[in-house]
Amino acid sequence: MENLTLVTKVDKTSQYDQVTINQILETVGAGVVITDLKAIITEANSRAAMILALGSRDALIGKCSLDLFAPYDRQRAVQNLRELLEQGAYVTVEYTLVRTDGTELHLNIGSDVLRDTARNEVGFVLTLIEITGPERTWQMLGNSEVKLWSMLDSVSDGIVIMDLKGVVVRVNQRVAEMHGVDSREAVLGKNALQFVAQRDRKRAMEGRKKALEQGTARDIEYTFIRVDGSEFPGETSTSVLENDKNNPFALITIVRDITERKQQQESLQKLYRQEKKLRKKLESEIQKRVELTRALVHELKTPITPVMASSGLLVAELRTEPWLSLAQNIHRGAINLNRKINELLDMAKGELGILKLKLGTVSPQKLLQEVVTEMTPLAVRRNHNLTLQAQSLPVNIYVDKIRLQQVLFNLLNNACRFTREGGNITVRVKQEQDYLIVEVEDTGPGLTAEDQQHIFEPYHFMERDRERLSGLGLGLSLCKNLVELHRGEIWVKSEKGKGCTFGFSVPLNPSLPAR
Image (cartoon, rainbow, N blue to C red; front, top):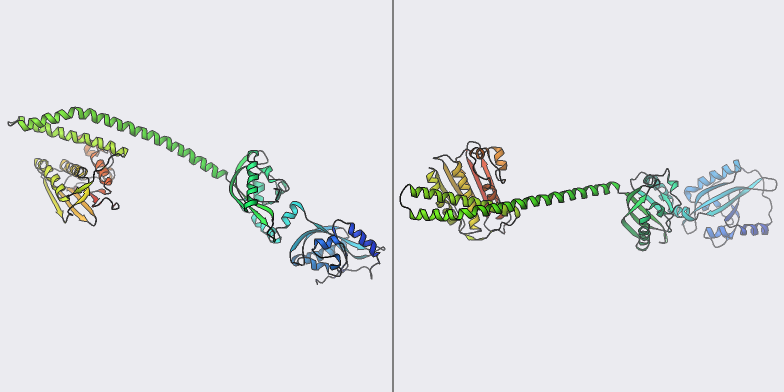
């Protein structure tokens, strides 16, 4: 028993009419315990026994009242009783008591000094008042949770505890800040729905019902209102609190102000709409350019077809000079123009993503020999040394023969175009693992570092092109498209004044991953 030393101002207690005292105590709605100056219980009513979960009031008689207090509250009770004797004023203090089964009970205990007819102190009268309503709900959380709230006041999310009817019992400081009130007390005792916008209250009630039925209701968005009438979006997660008998007694809700997140989402939506609008505009511009290209191709193809046919017939029939040479020049020019027109059409198809390959089994040795043979007359006319170096080539590869020849013709045409008379052009071909590697090396003027960065971009004109006003800047870009359609890569290696080496790789089988 806790040792209690109290100043005793009388030598013995007065005598009471026991029956009368018992009758009076039983009429009191609260629990009443009477002790002597040593805190030993001398009388108690049935209500006190019921509150403390004892079978009868007789179970209290003779016990030290201090033994009913939780260990951490006993010294505080001793100190309060001493102060009560000194000051003589009735006080009500909140304490935690412990029942015989070990469960804790939170009570408001009113204490007063008991005096005899001579006004001498003879004991104490303790009135046990159960904490009910929202206050009781909070007390059921226990002493450790009370300490926890001092830490929860510093978190960025609002924390609300309400009873099962939705009455707010406890909040942290963040809740007060969210709703624009001066203190937490302005929120306590009010129904939580008062802080939800009218249009969302029905959903909020459904969310609370869901939490009670399922134990939790997570990540639900509501519109909340501040004391000044302004609104803010919030996201809530609600869980049920249960007592030691697993019975729900309260709800805890975490509230997060998602104003910033909503603003970010709106900004993203705005950017998305702008991007969508720009994409549509760009697609429209591309479509117009493609349509223009198709129209241009059609207009160019119409007159070039009879020129090619007529010049071809003249070349076949003429035998005397200078008419044969003139006819050959016209025919070569028509063929070259027709090739440029086809490149223009292929680029338009590539931009739309409708340029397709027709794959088949091809002998790489034969394909390369055909291209070099066809390009040899041009090289001879320009006094170039054109050589083919092929080593350890596979028997067959699976490619689009026409498109791969188109790539080679473009690379060789460029090499012949920019290599001075007497220069060398070398075609090197080899197999490297599961890829065919082709390189075209020339001894031309080479490329600057800046030109190398943009050389495969469509409509890119190098400085020397501008000076000579030749080319649409489509050939190398088309080569890149065709090589990548084969799941290959294309590159250039060059130094200004030291020639160029254009190379590309294609897989021997299109099912292989890109190099």
